[in-house]
Each structure stands twice: as structure tokens, then as C-alpha cells.
Image 1: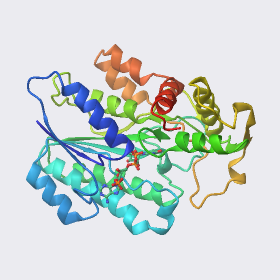
Image 2: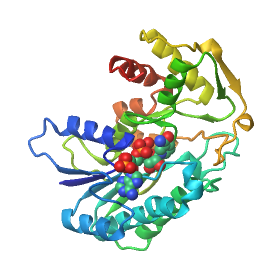
Image 3: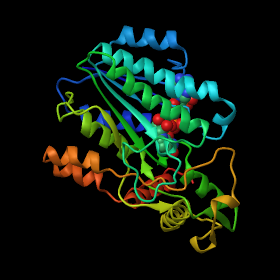
Image 4: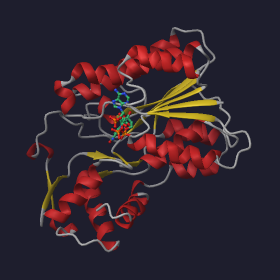
Length: 320
Ligand SMILES: NC(=O)c1ccc[n+]([C@@H]2O[C@H](COP(=O)([O-])OP(=O)(O)OC[C@H]3O[C@@H](n4cnc5c(N)ncnc54)[C@H](OP(=O)(O)O)[C@@H]3O)[C@@H](O)[C@H]2O)c1
């Protein structure tokens, strides 16, 4: 089998390199995997992207590339749409035309956050900013391509939130600030689930591949993929700082000096949803239907379980 992974240098792309390596290391018949970053393939360049797909002929396409600069997107709408909507359309069309499997990623920012309770996959998309609009258009386009093409291919769009991995993210920003300042003010009225990129890659491959790295059949569509539970940015900041202190890092800020504030007190160019809670019942039902307890257990992992080891590793690697 041939697997093509876009976005190899991003948080999720690096997690896929790790996870695919682990899963295939002991296999006799290993899949051929090609990882590409923006240098090897600028996905905003339709010709280059199409050429790569036609040349490599993947049976599984994993799109971990994205335009993720939420605030900058407000003034770079064309580029955000080229990367987050048009590129996935081209990948989806290739997958549909060639009976391939397509894994794509989307975001809680496709919602306006006004719903009370947990968002479901079929809830109305009503993004607040350009980034969310470009990701929402990507979702719609992938579904339309597959609906209008006679195909044995399949797709999964994993909607996730607050991703942290090997790269820039909220936790790393907080730990940097905690070294510099004695007090932090962090938003405490936006709710969501911090998601480890490693966890997300594992859950994605749990859906798409069996233990021999052969493709599984699943129902095409959107799947919410976040760990269990919820917190606020303030809750996440407090845990990250405490975990760093517990790992022996010297910080100027302690959790008691992290003051909760309202989102309105910290205005940003792009508005964010106040509620990013997403139900994972749909993915739950798939794994339950397969009778696979280990996959269910992993899906049900509480959000905070992966934060401590993540921070401890940053400390060990001298990255705080
Ligand atoms: N980060 C979050 O908090 C979050 C939350 C919800 C959903 N998501 C979604 O989760 C997915 C993975 O996010 P992430 O955190 O891993 O993002 P990331 O760390 O920002 O990585 C994105 C990758 O996309 C690549 N890329 C950007 N423009 C490209 C282009 N024109 N051609 C080829 N590659 C390009 C970047 O390459 P370069 O580094 O070379 O530019 C980067 O490696 C995305 O779909 C994102 O929308 C993320």
C-alpha cells in the first residue's frame, strides 16, 4: 500500500511520522509512505499538488497540512482558502476518482460556539472568522466531491480542537511566558478539549488501518476527535505550569498567579467560539461496533492525561 502524508513538519504531521513508524516497524509487508512538507509540495499550487498525486498514486492520503494562522487569516483570506478548501478538494477528487481513502482534519472553529452543550457532527456550521470559514468550506467541498463521484473510495474528516504536539502551541507559549513573568492573565470563559497530536494520529489510524496496516472500511463523513472532558484556557495553563514545576523547571509564575479573565478582556483579530465542546459519540459507536475495547479506551482518555507527560518531555528535552 502507498500512503501520502501532507504537512509532515506540522504538529500532526510529525505525530503521523512517529505513529506510522511504530505501527509498521514490525510488519513484513510495510506500506510505502511518502511524507511531504511545503518545500516538497506547496498544496496551494494546484498543478504541483495534482502532479504529485498522479505520480505517487496513493491508496491512503493523510492531509495534515493546513493554514492554521487564525488571526493572520483575517487578512490572508485567499491563501487560507487555497490551502484549507481548494487543496483538500483536489485531494478528495483524486481519492474519489481512484477509490482511495482520504483523512482530513478540521476544527471547532467551524462553529460559532453559541450552542449550549456538546456539538454534534451534523450541527450547522456557522464560523466566526476567515480561518473557520475556510475550514468549513473544505469540509463541505470534500463531502460534495465524494457525493458527486461514483467511487469505492472513502473519507473521514476529523474535527478536533486545541492541538498540541511538536511545534508552536498554547502550552508552549504559556510555559515561555511563565518563565518571563510573575503573573499571567488567561481566558477562563472559553471551553474545549486540549488534544494531543500523538493521540489524534493514533485515533485516526485506529479508524483507517488494521493491525497489518491494511485499510479498513468505515462510513465516510465527519468524526469529532477530541479526548474526554473539558477545560478552559485558564485550566489548561494552570495544569501546564504545575506539570512543569513538578518536572523540576524553574518558573516565575505559579498556578496561583494565573488570573482568570473573560475573553472580552483579551480581544484578538479573529473571534473565537466560546463553546468548543464536541461530542465523540459517533466515533465511539464505530469502535464499539467493532467490539474494540482498546480503541474505545483510548478515545475515552481524559484530556489532562496526556498533558503532564507532554510537559515532562518538554522539560526533559530542555524546551521550556
Ligand atoms: N493547532 C490547533 O490548535 C488546531 C485546532 C483544531 C484543528 N486543527 C487542525 O488540525 C490539523 C493539524 O494542525 P497542526 O496543529 O498540526 O498545524 P500546524 O502545526 O500549523 O501544521 C500545519 C502544516 O501545514 C503545512 N502547510 C501550510 N501551508 C502549506 C502549503 N501551502 N503547502 C504545504 N504545506 C503547507 C505547514 O508547513 P510549513 O511549516 O512548511 O509552513 C505545517 O507543517 C489542521 O487541519 C488544523 O486546521 C488544529
